[in-house]
Amino acid sequence: MRAYTPKDDVQKKPYYTDRYWVAPQVAKSDVSEDAVFASDLEAIKAKFDVVDAYIQVKQMVVVINAADNFGVIELLKNELDYNQLSELSAIDWLAGEGKFEIFYQMLSMSKRKRIRVKCKISEKESIQSVEKLFRSADWSEREMYDMFGVVVNNHPFMKRILMPDDWEGFPLRKTYPLQGDEFAQWYEVDKIFGKEAREIIGPENRDSARVDRYDTERFARLGHEVPRGADISQGEPDTPLVYQEEGGVFLIQKFDAEKSVVISDRDR
Picture 1: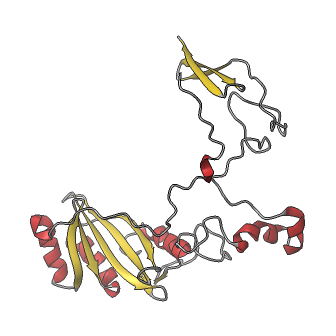
Picture 2: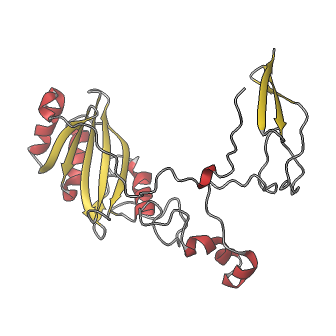
Picture 3: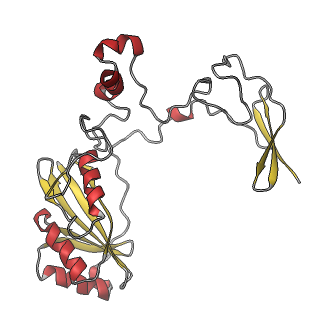
């Protein structure tokens, strides 16, 4: 039997404290080692400037100028048979470089190859939409605008997609507070009741990972049910055996509050 370890404060323990820590990259290899990638790279270089190119994790990474993003993606789709845009987003490097990194993950079903096209823009710059080439870019570009504040030119409907239209800030920037700022903490109170209700209602707790085991208003624990709103701060009551059918097998669970152990057995 495995001893039960209390997890009351597990959400309070940070997994790492340096928010700007960057994991070391895996090894890179020369594009000439792969005949297919070498041929594709030559086709790109014939029409556009390539800042850098290498193979990493069995895919080719091509770094281009931001002004060429539409043309390069169009070339990959129409001439090099990379017929799927599987991912598109941004990375916040504003603290170290003052730039966003925009990347496009391309897949060729016929070649069974993947290419990642990357370019960098400053915070005030914008990027050309590729929605006319791939419809999947529609929501991805809106999400990039919503989460990072990257403006995409010639997008058919450039507005926020996850956050409210009047939201302040961009949640996936590294400078955005992990649990929101004053605007985030009071957003729903101000929106619904007005700022005059702040002292009555109090700020919203936007920490989605927070779990209070003594909160019986919003949380229920299977096998340890108590009436809604019951005070369990002095300990949860003993719970009799509970039979739960799961995939044709009955599980017997019992919670021993005094020893803080969970006992599980199978009734065959």
